[in-house]
Each structure stands twice: as C-alpha cells, then as structure tokens.
Image 1: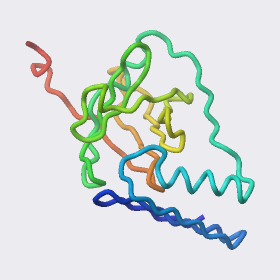
Image 2 (image 1 turned 135 degrees about the vertical axis):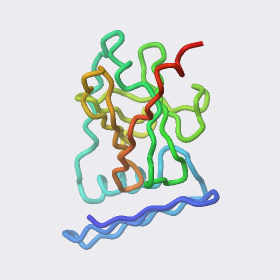
Image 3 (image 1 turned 45 degrees about the vertical axis):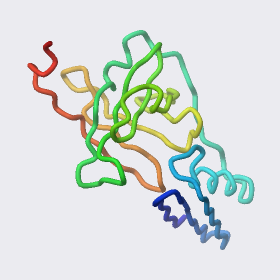
Length: 166
C-alpha cells in the first residue's frame, strides 16, 4: 500500500493506493482533529472493499499502578506534526493522551490497552501508541504514535529531580 495524509486549517484528507488490486481510495473532509480520522475511514473502506482484516485489539485488565510506567510528557523533537508533545495521564485505571498543550482530561483522548505496551484510541483503534518496555527506572523512555499513515516517535521529557518538589 502507498498512502499519504494531511491536515491543515480545518481540513483533513488521505489518499491510499493498493497496487495488488489496482484500487485507490481517497477521503476528503472538512474536519480537523476529529475521530475517526480520514485515515481510519480509508482503512475501514479498504477492509470492506478489499476484504482486509480488522484491527486486532485485545483489551485486557490493567494491573493497579501498571500505567505509571507510561505517564509523562513525550517530545516529538524534529518530527513535529502540528503539536510538539504527547502527554499521557493515568485516571481511574485508564490511560489518556493529550496532544500539544492538552493536559486536562476534558481535552484528552481515552486509550484502550491492546497488550505488550500498546494502546489504541478508544474512539479510533487505527490510532495507536506503542511504548518501549520500561527501563531501569521503571519508566518507558519512548513511544511511537501510529497515525496519519506514519509512525511518529516521541521521547520522554526529562524532568529534573527538584522540579517535582513543591
């Protein structure tokens, strides 16, 4: 499959070409940052038209305290796509993600555990987040966001030890 997607000023689109079946799917929208994304819509159309398998999400129980290894702010670095950071928070046994400056739950997206350090967006399982296994400090140092027809890495922001003291 060859694909490209984009988003700007209230518009979002994606274009995908499947050479094995000589099929092209284009999704154009006048929405931005909404779920499901045009990429998700394109993939759902491809599943119906081409008989492709669905997203495999096996939500299992999360052990109490297990989400703390993923919590934090991750910097996209030179790979910015409209927002410079991803922020992950644990709340009532679930993990939430915020894009850019979004840091309260009202602005964040709930995630569903998909196993082996992977989570997907609750309203759009095509948008996924794969964390590196925790390091010696018990925290994951990197996450890769699978969205917009690409994989976008982000590295945990280092917080000085005295910054957490009040």
